[in-house]
Length: 144
Image 1 (cartoon, one colour):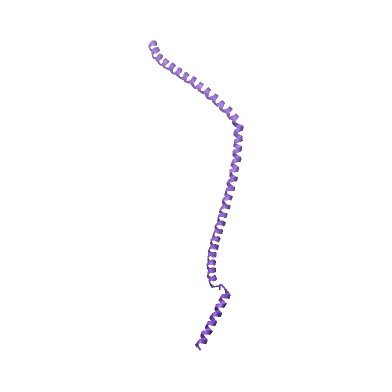
Image 2 (tube, one colour):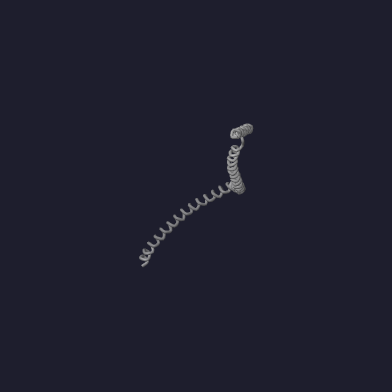
C-alpha cells in the first residue's frame, strides 16, 4: 500500500518540484529584471536631478516668452485697430479726391462755356460795332 501511495504521490511531487523550479527561475528572472529597472530608475532620477536647473531655467524663459507673446498680441490688436481707422481715413480721402475731381471736371466744362462767351478782343468788337453802325447809316441814307 505504501509503495503504491508513494508512487502516486511521487509523480505529483515531481510535478510540484518542476513547477517550483520554474517559479524559482521566473523569480530569478523577475529579480534580475527588477534590479535592471531599479538601476534604470535611479539613472533617470539622477538625470532628472542634473536636468532640474536647466528645466527650471527653461520654465522661467517660457513664462517670460508667454508674457511677451501676450504683450505682442495686445500690440497687434491695437495696431489692427489703428490700421482699420487709417484705412477708413484713406477711404474718406479717396472719396473726397474723387468728388473733387468730378467738381474740377464740371468747373473746367463751365469754364470752357464761359470762355466762349467772353469777347476775345474788345477793341475789335468795338470796331466791328462801329463798322456795322456806319454801314447801317449808309444804307439808311441810300434808302432815303
